[in-house]
Image (cartoon, rainbow, N blue to C red; front, side, top):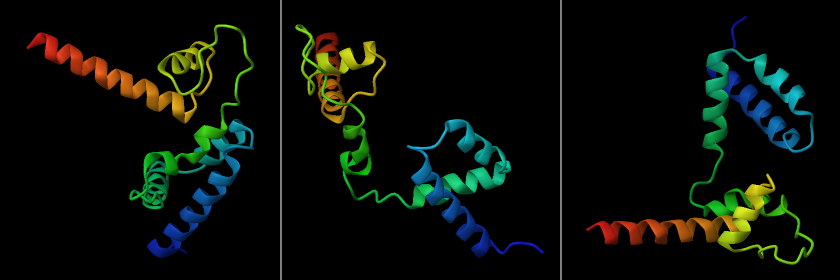
Length: 123
């Protein structure tokens, strides 16, 4: 019995929603085993199905809201740069931490400004 395209899409959507729930809590090896059970076409369809679930009218900060939850405030260690700054972003990276959203925004803004200065200086 072959699966209809509607039934296949429904199955992949349910699988994707299950993965979305489990991705933060389960063992990555278990999730990898689950994904390894899909053939290449199913994996592509799963990615496309999940991409269709993203509300692209929202700002990125709302789409990836959990990123701000991944970094807890750091204990004061004297010269540790504050979060929400480019230096804070670099400190996260040195510590191999996922930067919080405020640090990432500050870093990207500083990088845009630096590149703009470089472009102006080269003209």
